[in-house]
Amino acid sequence: MIAIIGGGPAGLMAAEVASAAGLSVHLYDAMPSVGRKFLLAGKGGLNLTHSEPYSDFLDRYGSRRKQIAPLLDAFGPDDLRAWAGGLGVETFIGTSGRVFPTEMKAAPLLRAWLRRLRDAGVIFHIRHRWLGWGDDGSLLFTTRNGEIRVQAAATVLALGGGSWPKLGSDGGWVPLLAERGIGIAPLRPANCGFDVGWSEHFRSRYEGQPVKPAAIHFTDATGCDYAQQGEFIITATGVEGSLIYALSAPLRDALEATGRAVIRLDLAPDWTSERLINRLSQPRGKRSMATHLKRTVNLDGVKTGLLWEFLARKTFEEPEQLAAAIKSLPIPLLAPRPLAEAISTAGGIPFEALDEHLMLRAWPGLFAAGEMLDWEAPTGGYLLTASFATGRAAGLGAVEIAIQQESVVAQVAERGIV
View 1 (cartoon, rainbow, N blue to C red):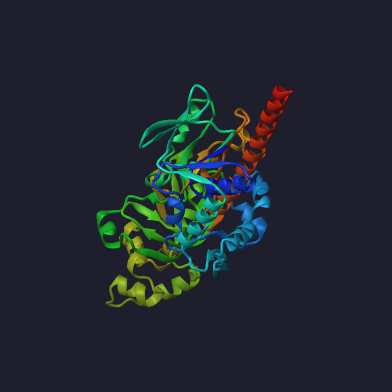
View 2: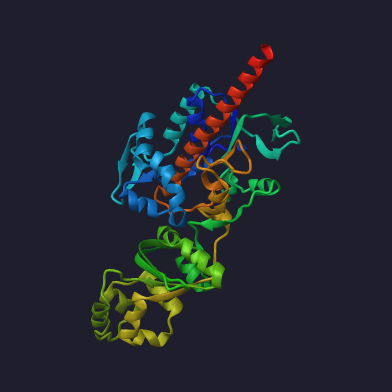
């Protein structure tokens, strides 16, 4: 029997390939139903994967490109789209290159998937929280009816990271593995927002408002430059949204390393500095500065609010200085938002502790997949694609181990009879 612990995309994919091999598969999840974070990810439109050139796609995994690449070679973006089609879920490529189901939502795909898994014989055990191992090596679970022990030929852990703990990914597995001597890279927020420390005046007026279009430039302590254009949201404590998430890894790393991260915000990415200076140099007359900015360079609302939040009043009277600030407004970040609020998790089980099938080298028969592993990627379908791919790899590895064990048991039984 193969035990899968965790009912997100990685765990469900591991269950699928294991059941397809004809093995008995039991999937355990602590929540009342499986796929809860998957459903949340698809609430505003399920971004399954991305259609960009494959080499660029692999680059999204940063320092873990080398480890993720062979997994995606075996099950990549095109394979994921074909797999969804096999469930009766057609996909399309959006204007941004992102790939979505035609119905946009996650629920239809998840329902079809669970139906196929049950038809294949996968047995689901909900409200089963994993507690670790018993003295006899069995898996321990707490249930509504007390603790139970489960013996498995192979086990796949797909328990997620530490983001959105209310949906099941609470990082509770970290001490369980650490007790067994398995090194874990600290879990950290990825694709997260950041605190800024707004004045009460700014927060009360602009909380929840989008800043668009805009561009962000950031240079880390090593001199490495990052730039991204898009939009973000003003929050009660700081900033979040796609533009911020795209740079969250280097921003978080800079704050951890030096305690400092200053982004430079271009509030008029489609304007040159020269054009801004020419327009701002027009006589203001009796117009207010807010009206002048609106009429000359089309800045108002939250963008104007950001200028007043960080600039000295005299800067507004100097067209060249004001234009420079509009093109490169420094905003100091104080800290990343807590892990529980992040979209995803960095840190986890290092790939160096795993073999090519994602089995722990120090623990034969134990596999790990999904956000439990030490990797991260931006939003845009990259997180889901790699989660599917790692689940598939771990499931296939578990099948191989389980078949080997069944073969050994059969040989022992045959010799006993002889």
